[in-house]
Length: 154
Image 1: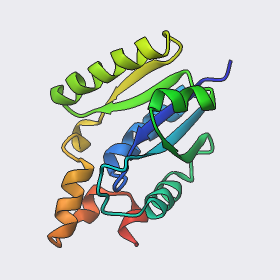
Image 2: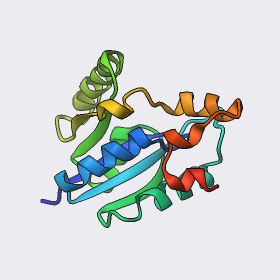
Image 3: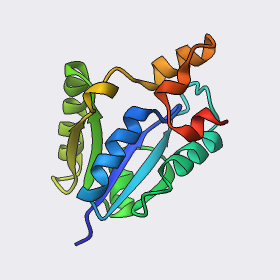
């Protein structure tokens, strides 16, 4: 059976933390789908098309990674694409508590057909979040040290 993982998020924008998780997960799975979730309640800084392009450009060197867009529950998307794993990155204990609750809920909904796999973000990148990057960008700060090259050259 093919090991397919979905790495869901808004990626507004993709950060070096996201890149770190994907890079380290590539050898673990046959395919990783970086899935950009759409939430009508959120106000994104960047368009869906821009975020998708940045992710594709940033991760193009990994042949087993693809980028997709979805709406609704992540667990339903996993079933749709045949994924048995949800990939999540953890930066700190607060992330763990939040992600643990979601993982338990997903496991209950999916009848244990989908397992959540957590990777700890590398220590040098654990402080990076998309919300911090957006704040640095809004205030004309040095955001380039926080994002992949594809985001820096845009």
